[in-house]
Length: 326
Image (tube, rainbow, N blue to C red):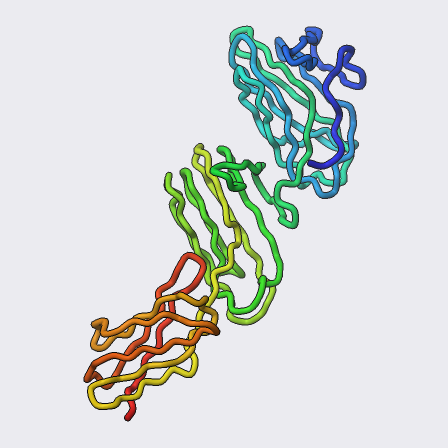
């Protein structure tokens, strides 16, 4: 959370103002927090505050009372027309409505809350804030993402609104062949790395979306766009590197009916498994030892062999073709 933002309306609305004929009602929440109850389309305007230059989102805790309502949330800059930040539909339980304020970072504004109660209902507003930067180092072009810990892991939550985030940075180390994002929920996701794009339907189960990265050691721009289609989407492992493995110094030598294959699989951890194929059929297997070395002894009359290393979630598959020498 970042500093800034006015506190709640308090017992006397100090610093707050209203637009409308019906006076604001101040109510005391069971927890001892004062809320401003808005009825009959009375608009509430916060005191002016300066938004931290790092800010990406702002939360407005509110709830509806008596009936449903919609609340248009806008920013009032010092000069110019109001800037719409979104429309909230608060429910009976106090919930923070989160809006994107990345485009207002560094500015001094007031927040305007304009309710439209239905059937005589009202809206209770508990203040403005917190102001947050859930994705430090990222540009939040659209949407209001939040971070939540679920299943013991931090996840980026996209709740109903379009999300558009972007980050440019050097690759985190050599040998990276792709970047990965895991998504779960509904709607669609687009992941792009330096113009290379993958699009996918999001399912209720976790799904990995991989995008290849340039082989050159260049800074990459990762852009993620999510259209949840009115559903909720969770993202995790955002930008997780998927590394290449490379066969080097691989040879196959025959002695009678026995072929000895040896070499190195660079980038693979000890314990990784390999398979040796002849004419499309597996004829042997090996386990990678320290420093990526492997060797296997097998019985085959084939003159051509293929050695394969299956891919994992964070490692690309690899293969090499050999001619058996004597």
